[in-house]
Image (cartoon, rainbow, N blue to C red; front, side, top):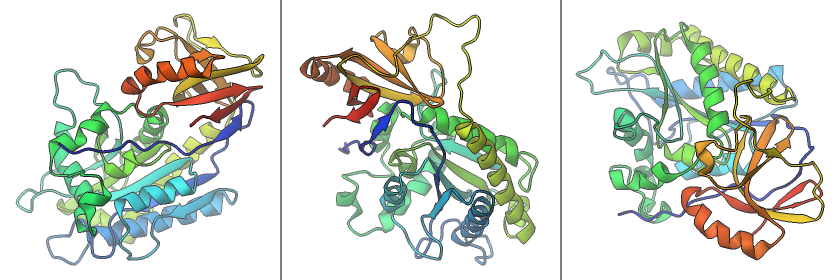
Length: 360
């Protein structure tokens, strides 16, 4: 069985009252260089070229409309970039959003499957279903890029894209950015519907490596099927690529407006009692275990918290959920050894005068 270490978000220190703004977006055109991605039956059209065109158009639109937003491309030409390298670029940029752009395909003998799809990292919610079973072919195909890299088995700590056991760790992860990723995914699905690629295949939660390693809200968009003649006809035209980029931009604009808007939705009238809202400035110093950052107002009895004592801290229009708040750091560390099993992305924070500081 593969053995992987779980990466965590970068260290940060942020006042609880600081305004939240979407200031940096990373756009990731899939594949590139020696990795062509999907190839058309004629061999003339390659995924790496199509997605770079769409990504470049999207980047231009965002830069033109939002001069204050930093737009980072994981590649701007026909260059091979490793999967981990793409995530590293996004994490180094401290991006607020990661958009990975791809094109789908199936066996050459099958031309029927069509449509675009939007993917986020997270646990599949339907009971009695094999996790990720519906999309494992596309997941393996996109993740298999690492096999083109030198010494990939060492670099990726034993991760094997063809081995189902390698996905167990992703299955167990609690993604701190799931709710925000889903929000953007829904906007993409809405904006692309009826566009250059008519059919939507919906939103799904899948173990794409590049999404797993990014410490921010992240989506992967499969813009259509290279293997489908109708989809391919839209993907190879300037008009089709322009429309896809425009739809992605419209989704980004809606997401940014909501992200920057300030304020938080009030709980519904029939909601359970809310989690205790901590004051902006604590008396003394507390230590706790941060398990989630979300725009969602969650009740104390929400199953996500598994019955643990929890506090909610309001930060701009987001909430930080912290378990086991205590003035005793050692007590919090003891609790963390248990909590980390259920929340692999969690970490200990020091809360002092409204300022959060991650603890080692």
